[in-house]
Amino acid sequence: MQGKIVKGIAGFYYVYTAEAGIFECKAKGIFRKEKIKPLVGDNVEMEPISLGEKTGNIVRILKRSNELIRPAVANVDQALVIFAADRPKPNFNLLDRFLVMMEQQQVKTVICFNKQELVKEEELLRLEKLYQGCGYEVLFVSAKKEQGIQELLQVLKEKTTTVAGPSGVGKSSIINLLQPKVQMETGDISEKIERGKHTTRHSQLIRIQEQTYIMDTPGFSSIYLTGIEQQALQSYFREFGKYEPYCRFQGCSHIHEPGCSVKQALEEGAISPVRYENYVMLYEELRNTRRRKP
Image 1 (cartoon, rainbow, N blue to C red):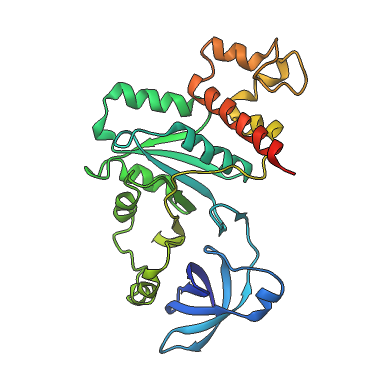
Image 2: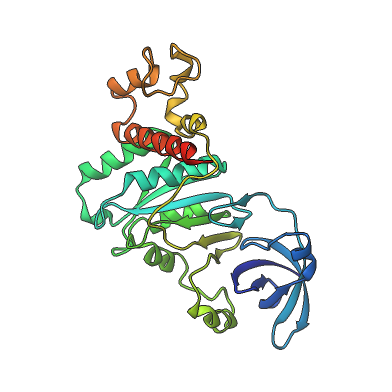
């Protein structure tokens, strides 16, 4: 029987099958032996142990289209990062860290600002310009007033989307509006997954509609960039790309060098000062991390 892992808790994997709903499964020992860990989002082959109790064993993980390290999920088409337009005010440094992380993993990212009812039109336009100007799709919603949800559904349609964001921005409220039938059309997922309530929150895959899934991941309050060389950071700030070939020096860091086209674009208002300041901060952070390595 084939299915998709929708949640994993303490060595148990909850596999959704179209034919029979959710099965609570263990992974065969061969995966541990081969150092392969099943991930939320994996398409798997499962052997039922008991159809009545809906238990089984995962015997095969089907080929992944991709695998994200952070969050640890598989077969993702895009990421949706949710921040609040206000209360709390957007932390642009945290947002840019997430965008860099997704660029590094080559995952398309859509930015969603919730609580649009709390700010004036001029502020919404400023937020839109800040990130649309560097090539990101930007959406505005209000979970409280249920505005923008249909537009958001269109962006999610027929894709598997990992949904992330800091605590307090209304991520859960948006997810509840997107999927009022949280139990994935079966009655047993809640009962089975409730056993994991005492554990820390894990990623969870939720079916919204046909071929449309969202992956709810734990909220984050900080992101540390790992596995990135400081020289590579500029390639993850996509708005720098069209100016870099015109820098005087090859391998320009866009910080100290004279004749830097990126800094010139910054002075001319073509590159956001907010984004540039975050780039410089992250560049210095990566350089200091490198110095500390033995």
